[in-house]
Image (cartoon, helix red, strand yellow):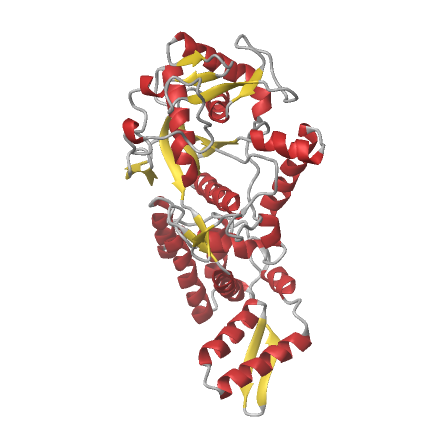
Length: 453
């Protein structure tokens, strides 16, 4: 198995610290609002990675943290005139509900930042003693970036070109603009914890260093998250943990690519910001998962209605191929079979789901030619290793066939008009959209008729 290591910028043979065991830490959500599509892509990606490791007979310990104390959380709670715990618990529940619909397994451990304050203070105390951190005049504790000689190795930036990170407010109390906060002195009305440095709360970066060490150890196999976290968050984690422990932090770094909306970066200011819950109200959850996995996890993913429509058609093709069969879902995969071997080879090459899914379509085509029960069961089993084709075909089509007969007839008339005007692209699009909703059109001499798949 090969994994692209963001730290070394190349694919490497994956060798776990302990044979057949994998320890993974994934940066999770800051819970003050509904999860957005970027959060969903990250969690689908690493759920896929986890599932493939399990299918490959590894015992996986999967940790994904929750940030439940943060400036945005405090501000939102104040706006709502609401207790912080009430706010965070509510959005944690929403996150679990939405992720479950996408087939994302719950982490083995889901630590909350507020539960690990003593561990964070222990690391901060160690860094101050070793000269890697200092208590500023305003009561904040800062990390001395220039003291850590390897700083910038993950992001590939030279230390002199770096600027304070997105979440780091440049303060006059800093010795250097690059220094980042480890402990924030309490402001009036804010929640705080007692410490030798004074009442305050942790900075954002220190929480992941503390929780990963407490739950997985000083050195573990894989650390992952979205590409946007590479700098400064993950860079800062490395600096904190390695200065504190004197050893390598994570052996492999994995980052999924950005998600764009209609070829533009998702942004509230651009008006193209979507919550996962909004999208789940419009599209089948498995279609969204399938759409996200068709693109390699490191590549940018462009979210669009056309892309989702195409994903619906593709997923429908797979379900259509298995519809005639009573599938035994307890079948063990024979990895020596040609299709299974090709699928495994694709997945073992840095989790190439794009290629793996193309192999699923090859199997579907072969099923249609041969009417082969064994191939249908193989298709379902292979799909299951990445969390797809997780319901019976009949359930899939029943859920999709909610379109009314009147609307179907309306679409047939639109298609007829498009064909008369030689607008065959629109005609084909209408046919494919109906097929994606479980409706097959048949052109007869007397006109077009329709039926359920």
